[in-house]
Image (cartoon, rainbow, N blue to C red):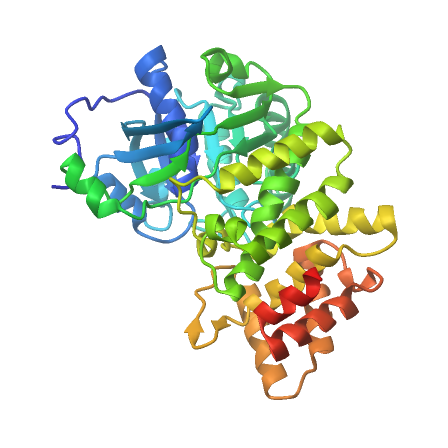
Length: 482
């Protein structure tokens, strides 16, 4: 039997106060679980309307389950094994803007709405010049959000009370500030009223955030768990028990989202930069840099990677020799955090697939790893060998093949098309590896700069790529580590 309100006898309806862009595993296990707990234990009385940012029908399957899903949290807490299984009852409905655009705009007319959450990956908070107000919907997430906020502005005549608290969870620096800038740019491009822009600037609060919890997704033993629970759940998700949400406080956020006062590891701070740099550079940087190397080596999970003698050594050197020296924090504190991260990677209860982490790897590399490469070179005058090798491995990964196996790469279409064209040109001998690397490094739309200007980077990547193609990953990585 499918999980729904008939199966879950404790089902409750709450006031719709939150709109969420993104239906993925992370937000459901991270934010939606928290809100469920706030509802059940602290009378928060807030439900979530989930907006699917892409034209897929997943939200309708979620609606079939009345927005219910199961989160399984596992891990070690001071040596004690922890397993928490609970049904999450914080989502009231899901909606696809490509099929229900009028309904999407009607949601903006709800006076109870106060919070907007999002996680559209690092590739989501971007400015797309082709977006138009007349689009139903605009293609980009900021375009969709601008149209939503404009409809709300008109509905409530730009009142102070109709302003929103926008809490993006995308892992980019100053994510709230960046989203706000793009929305204002879109509004000007669409020739919207100056009063609307003033309303955005004065009565809507865009909060910079940092999220930290590993959410691998669907548990490996899902069928076994369903048999034990007595129902089918297409949205079951597994996460670690570690949890941290840091939010730069603005306006009266605590009044509408009091998570920092309820015993959760949610911090409202004035400056989250120290938290962000530490987490994004080490945890996310390690994840992103290990994926192409480990996958092409033949491993498939994070745990296998950090426990493998060769790949584990590569990850350890990348973190402790190349990433940590670029972070301006107490060395002892940062190394302790790094050791904790590696321990979290080894969580025996979590199977975190590398292929899942590989989603939008190019934009992830830009935000999570590239800053460490550039900072390391600035400090030392040379490039960090292991991180640059990861960059070369990423380009090899985007060939989309591992021996006879096809790698299911997920990224923006324009990136996939570029790689397909470049690798085809290489194999047809109309392009050299130097040509291919030059083109990738020159993608200023992606990197926000021409990386061909970084002295020695292109040549070092070409050298590594040649060895990977000629000798394979296993032999090449051993040579790199010598």
